[in-house]
Amino acid sequence: MYGYKTYHENLMRTLINSVHSSLASHAYIFEGENGLNILESAKLFAMALTCQNPASAPCCSCRSCVESRADTNPDIILVEKPSDRKTIGVAPIRALTDDAAVKPFSSPRKVYIIREGNLLTEAAQNALLKTLEEPPEYAVFIIITTNSSVLLPTVRSRASLIHFPPVPDSVTSEYINEKYPDAPNKDFLVKYCAGIPGLADIAAENERFYPIRDDALKNLPLLLTKNRLCAFKIRDYLDAEKDSADMILDFWISYLRDILVIQTGAPKAVINTDALGELRGLAQKLDPKITAGALGKLFSAKEMLRRFVSIKSAALYLALGINGSN
Ligand SMILES: [Zn+2]
Image (tube, rainbow, N blue to C red):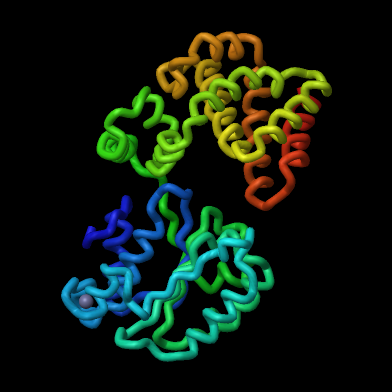
């Protein structure tokens, strides 16, 4: 769309129409999973916002539009996590608010895109707050985040929340066929991505993807066994694989979903079709309530990792929670 790889054309059309009718806000939260090209969508919206012909934005021919497409528009500023930090602290936000006091270079607006807004520290969000409360007329802020609830309520209340949902499997399938025509097990891959095409990049570019997936299945019974020793084994397993812990949790989530699907009598919806035998065996042994409870714990453990709780603590919370409750 206008040269940008957005997966959300209808949503973008609505946002662009708001520019035509002068109804654009000063602050947005773009919420959605990584792998949905939300940065591309934000750049497209920024192109429309900075176009010198607002009634037909993006006109694609004015100076701002040409520069936007070349990623050289001085009035579109991308704020990212410093490469040597785990979070976005006060310093880059102070630089942003100082910059926002200066009028645009040549566009009608100045757009700040904050990438990975879920990594903004509380102090950084507070530093941003005053500018969000009284933004210069020309400034627009777009905060991209996987989860808007981790932002301060004061920040959330000053921004329009735009949710970017997962896309249909047909879109993911097209993406995989185009980018990875020789990928093995494409049916599994499409289902594994669950509407987030970018997840296919992880599978294609990480040679340990399939071995880790196999190991996760082997270790799944440990997670579901009523034995505290198993909890410590889970902790040690995740600690030893700490760089892949998030991926392992995703595999467990997909296996448990499959078990639940089998238990509820809808085996056609199974994602891990190549592991159907093992999954059927587990489905027979487990109480569906335990499966559902374990899934909930896995989602919480994933959230803990996102908030930088240590692997060991998150793993123990997970394993003891599941083992202790069954
Ligand atoms: Zn233009």
